Length: 640
Image 1 (cartoon, rainbow, N blue to C red):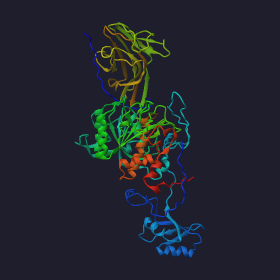
Image 2: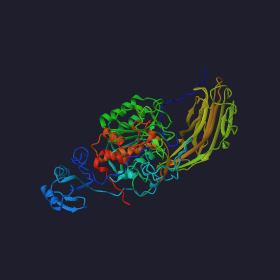
Image 3: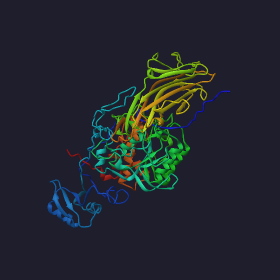
Image 4: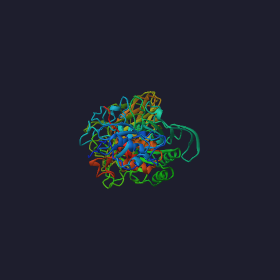
């Protein structure tokens, strides 16, 4: 009877971690507008906050008199409404008029427009210099302000086609125009449902959420919550041990403080909800609990830069319920598989519910990124946003130890032994000890009763808060019966009877598993780390074996809080739109998720290569979204 290797199988949602998952709008604005009736955008109902400053003088209007109207006619016309001509601005009949006490601009436009000697009336608009932050890395944030700059730390390198670095000036989100209206998102809680957030980061600590009346995902009182919640460790400490969530949070809301980067929101309330572990994966139950925690604690915009290929009824139900009960908006990633979602699948992007906005990734010339999923059916991928060479906050100081295969020690209890070889075009650590196998599930390779080991030791920082083994490999074994145990231990020697961090069994059908990340918690706090591989096989159904093509170990020190990273992904595009949504909902708290999505889609910049690949055919444009939020707020001029 076979001794079966026990393998625990779980369905993971993998975060799109960096390396992993047109006709432009006319920006010219006329100085004067012909307004023959009250502006709907100035009206008092649901479009403005009562405590928000209006973008025009509250006691004045600008009047254009009809041709040949002299000073006496002007004075008489204005006196009719108990106003006063303050200045005749030019000889074409344009005058600045002071309103009678208590008269609103809206009322004045309605009344003065009815006079036969008046051609039109408009507000006396207030103009601002476009607002730009002073943060030291702002010049590298092309998604917010694309000047055609070269991103010095670029990591985007498509296998075919140009990287488009530098890009095209103006292919950005028009953030400086939007910031002239508001930079503040603190009226809206934004949940980063991800790998956690380093809440001590110098660009994030001032913008983290906290509550004195926090409740659990089931609504049970938790008292005070600081920063968020951790559903991986089931505690109140949502520290990021991966980096992905901190990067996402920085794009949404890194503080405008003159240091490092800056987010779409300069001030914010970022709720860290940790549902992905240090390798960037989590499951249905964890993510649902994270969603429920977020909405029950007031989050109105949730960023989900994660995804998987399987339809998940429970997750979809949780997201839909959050929209119905809590008016919650989800901004989600389209995925990084270069797939057409009319043929392949990526969820939650494809749930298609009314409170979900799905985002594709664009490069610095507003071309669809080579890795980004898209949708020629134009049903589910809604909009594009910057997603290549994105600079943002990182969870801590990273160090990498590459482990060359020639440094590994090998031993064979029985059967085939491991060997480091260069018989391929790349170095490998190989078992079946043969260069003749293609690892495609055909033919025999390793010998019966194989029991072979390989191990390596190397120094690491004692300050590391996370240690992760990262490997790339081909695998072709009898699933459930033959496979590899991977071990890790700190300081003391490696024991093959314990310290297993994962077991791999089955086959990849000739495909390379690239950058598989496995946490090695036993090495945390040590000055040395030991990694071991143990291959076990029974007497039947021998296959090709295994070939490791790369093996390294990374460490992360979250106590170093001034780190930044440049990575790529639809995960990086998504928080650009999340920040926009928070900006809109903070500026107008009466906006529902439907209003917010409508403004974002209507205000986007038309991009030719998105016309056939997304629902809107547009790239995210914060200035355009603000125009759709309130009509007169589109008036901004550049001050040299």
